[in-house]
Image (cartoon, rainbow, N blue to C red; front, top):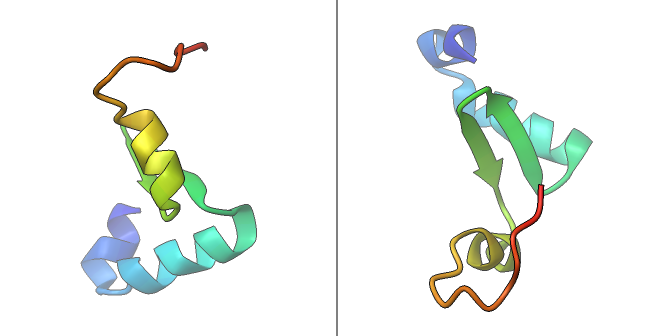
Length: 54
């Protein structure tokens, strides 16, 4: 990922990853890219109504 960031094409590369793997893509061990608003709401649910499982 750092290579694409340094070359200035990270956005294009990330978009290509989403086209290949779907709306939820793990970019690095500590970074996830989400393009689905419902998934974002579920991940960052403040109410705690949904149970988180691993």
